[in-house]
Image 1 (cartoon, rainbow, N blue to C red):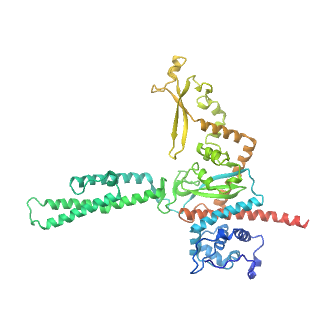
Image 2 (image 1 turned 180 degrees about the vertical axis):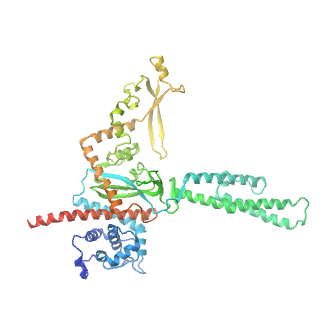
Image 3 (image 1 turned 90 degrees about the vertical axis):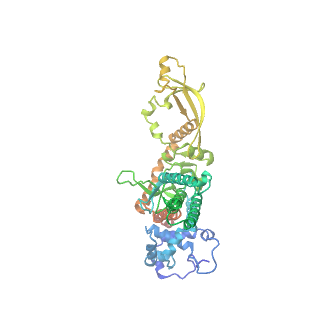
Length: 534
């Protein structure tokens, strides 16, 4: 059950309504949120008893206007509801506590709703002719997390200490088997927590049996009691297992689950990964906890966004495009050289059927005269396609040797061709040049698929249409990050956790979109009024 919500057409208008200008941003936010269907705004399976929930439309309006005014604190938004006239007009004079505001913007329903607002915003831009079908521009930036920069946990350190703990556990197991305290177990059981707890239980039972036996012994035994010495030894192992090894093993396993393939995380925000930030005042590549924000823009409007934990952009393009709702609107995907890879080119052309305008890493270098005239580069060697062999700048012939397959750590397979220098060259001098300093035959690796994509990208980027579209990247997607960090002051997240941070960034980007659209409408309003008078 939700509180009563009306769009303002049938309500009694207070006097302060006349003090909100017709061209004020708050009216654009009000109109935009009301254009979203109610079935999208409302959450399913809402309780019908108890106090009514705050309406999602009102909460979304409040947050969008607060973010457009660079107000991100829940307490400050609560104050804004009491003191700011446009905010009171937007909230229909409702007031909400910062608990309600924060709980909403952290919720899963808010996450789905914010993502859907970008869909309807894209549709609105398309209806008003603000989106062309030529290209979408993609780029990423690092956003520092709301976490302590010294709260790092490294996967290599955890793996190192966990391995040492397993070795220590194995040595204790060998001692217990040798002393006939426990029976032999499977190797995988020894290093597990269950196996360690089983060892502790068996040691506990043996200590109990020894206590009963020691009670029956005389008080003085020549040479000391063997059972007491055995009990001291077992108590030491029990204390080591219960107070040190088992708690540390549980801690390491819990930490390893948090990594989820990452190399680090922050103890303050487990979803944040340590990475190099754009802002590096000390110029020492200091690692800080943060997120990798990816956005898709057109005409400086953000059409979609996503948050990733890996710092490199190469592996974020395909997952981002899979969840991008407006990919079918465009024929070209434009990004910088950080996204150029064989996997990305293959997926864009074969799976998404889009034309990539993405240079590879060495694209600019290969366009220079120095590279083209460098005889040591295999790209500049003489190639005979009929007999499939290369001749290098020294005259050494490399004939086709065999095919090879390479699989990277992400599972992507590459088909390579190996060319080995012929054993018998045309002269003895070439025979010597065909060998490495270790007296082995030289060889080169050639990736035909990668060379094909490189040639295709070169052709596309060197065309007149490709140059014109790629030139727009610098003033389409880059200014969005500039406005977000400079004008809106978002260089650091305001919430913690992947979902909460994603909602926080989404609200910021949508507020940025509406602010830009409001300025465009205000600039065009005088021309529209003059045309109507004529």
